[in-house]
Amino acid sequence: QVQLVESGGGLVQPGGSLRLSCAASGSTFSINRMGWYRQAPGRQRELVAVITSGDITQYADSVKGRFIIGRDNAKNTVSLQMSSLKPEDTAVYYCNAIVRTGWGKTPNDYWGQGTQVTVSS
Image 1 (cartoon, rainbow, N blue to C red):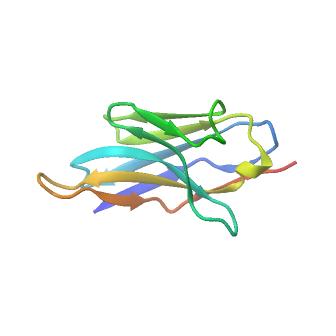
Image 2: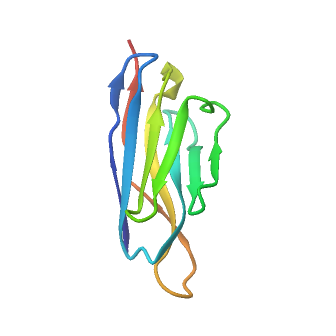
């Protein structure tokens, strides 16, 4: 199987910065897209930023210009540099990867366990 392990997160004041990292391991024959989603209390999980193996990126409008997603294909890692954080960025952030576990197999979605980001003074 595939495991996604996140690191980073925590408590930060408004205007501050945080960096999230995620490493994929296990049967990672090929990884197409990696990225980050978040879920705030009482709200649905939403896309934050994703990046393909060809470095094509997509961002939620609410984070454009403040967050930067990066990827190391050789290490199967994805990062999210978050700057100018706002209280509304408070949520549990989940790492996601679309992974093919073998030749000819259908890609599947995999998720990390989530890491809390709290933006508060």
